[in-house]
Structure formats: C-alpha cells, structure tokens
Image 1 (cartoon, rainbow, N blue to C red):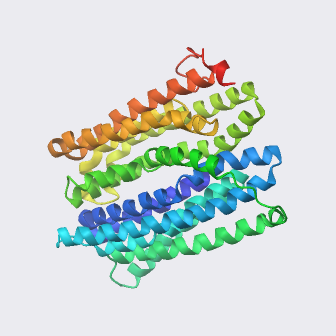
Image 2: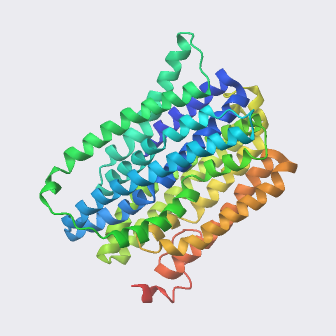
Length: 425
C-alpha cells in the first residue's frame, strides 16, 4: 500500500512538474483549479458510500452476512450513479454560469472536468469496495499507480512528438486514463464477487445513508482538504500564485500519502477488531500505527525544511516563492501525524457523527482565515490558515477518540478522561 501511494504520488508529482514546465505557473493554476473542481464534485457524487464500504464490508464478512453484503454493493452503485450524474450536471451548469458572468473566464476546462465526475465517483467507490474486502492491490494500483502513470506517460508522449499541450488537452488525457483504470477495476471486482450472485440481496438503505452522509462531510475535509483550499484561493489570488501554492502542497502531500497508506491498512483491521470487541488488540494496533505515522512525518518535515527550495525548483525558478508556504504546510501534516489515526478510528467504530462539529467548524474557520489573511499575506497566509485549522480539528478529534472509545490514539498524550468509554461498549 505504501509503495502504491508513493508511486502514485511520484507520478502525480511528475504530471504537475511536466505541466509547470510546459504551461508555466499561470496555466498550471487553471489546471489545478479545474482538477480540484472535478475531485470535489466526484467526492460529492460518491455520497460517502466509499467510506461506508470500508466500515460495512469487513463487518458483514465477519458476521457471514452475504445478503447485506450483496445489497450494499448493488445499492451503493445505484446511489453513486444518481449522485454523480446530478453533480456532473451541476458542474457543467456552474461553468456555463461562470462564463456568462465573467466572459474572460475559460469555461471549457471546467466543462471537461465536470464530465469526468461520474468516472471519478465510481473510481472512488470501487477502490473503497476493494479495500473493504482486503484486496489491497485492486484498491490502490488502478487509482494510485496506473491512472497517474498513464496520464503522465501520455502527456510526455504528446510533448515528445511536438504537439501542443494545454489545460483542456491535459484534462482529456486524464479522462482517458481514468476510463481505462475504471474498466479494469470493474472487471476485477465482478470476477471476485461471482459467488455473491447466488445470494438474494438485503437492503439496509436507511442505515447506509445515515452512515455515509456524515462520512461524506468528513472525507471532503480530510481527503480533499488541499482541493478545497485551492478552490478557495482561486477566488482571491491570480492563477499563477495558485499554481505556486499547489506546487508546495503537492510536495507536502508525499507526507499525506504516507499517512493515508498507513490508515488504509488500519481501517479494515480496526473495523474487524471493533466488531469482535477486542479492545486490547485494537489499542495495540492503534499505537503501532500512531508511532509509525509520527516517525515518518517527522523525518519528512526535517527533509523538506532542508531541501524544500530544491524541490520547488524542479517546477521552475518562479516556484521558489513557495518555500515558506511549503514549511507551514509540512508542519500541518506533522500535527495530523502526532494526534494518531483519530479520524479513521472514529469512522470505523461508528462515531462518525461526532466528527461533524469539528470538521464543519474547521471548514468555516478555513474560509474565514483565508478571506482575512490571503489578500494581505498571499500564499503564506493560506498556508498559515491551513496550519491553524489543522491544529484545531486534530486536537478536537484526538479528545473525542480518547474520551468516547477509551483508546489512547497518540504516543504523545496519555490516556485520560475515559468515563464515557464503558458506556459506549
């Protein structure tokens, strides 16, 4: 899983570097805003069923509930088909309205990005379903390795043969790579679930929806926090500065990919141990994961502080201006590592609704801080906003996991205040 995350991060990083070299910071800014637009709409169209899959599939397998398992697979596909179509339409309408209000705005990249929404939504869903079953190669290779590798290879070929590469053609290449990977993932999952076809499906729609929608809100802030930030910056900064900020964030996301890789292994294991009521084993797994996260993030932050300017220089000389933002964003990742795998822990143990107030508050504070700081301090103000918000919601979630689960989520803080833990179990 870690290898898949790293290879995918390198390929995505290579795509960003290639586009920065070919298009410059200004065009790169347009590309990343459009791509973030697509990712967020795709996440909304997935309706949180991917995150719910990681919770329900291991539990259904542990209980031998094949009927609910098949019902979830069929029901989630139907829900995502409807949801992604709706958000695809909203994206296209939004791009056309934006073009009517601002005739100078290039709306074509946003229309192409909106058309990618159903593909991305199903990629999110099927990758999470494979993760829930424990098929780690199927969960991570298509989305994290194959798709970015195909995209960067195709862009390199177009450039090598002297053809023009612009924002729209780059997004069309991403669409083709996404389609190929999605078809392969669908065929693989269908082949591995043939035995379920003999089981009549049982639908628990109310439970699934009640669980998935809070997980959707959580995922938007945790998994797509960079994309939310990029879209917000697009309202305050010119696209070239957005491109510089995105380059800094892309480098820092190597840390995030490492954290997500550890959490991706942890979540099915934690869901299984929680379903079995094995609190001692769950605590041991949590502490192992927490120490691994903290050690890896600490080493990465030190490396970025020392070599951050050289890393930004790979994009081009104009990207050196993002060093201060790079350091601040790296510290935000270190904060997430220090509190332990609290989001994953709360999600798979049925406490996802407790995460809503912290994340809703964080999103509101992020908008406020960016509105106040970015016009005056530019991308450094944006990075400081991200750091401040990350400290707030990370500590809030840490206390929730400690107090309501009786689990020590971080090696830096002792286990205290667990009076409600016995009530929950």
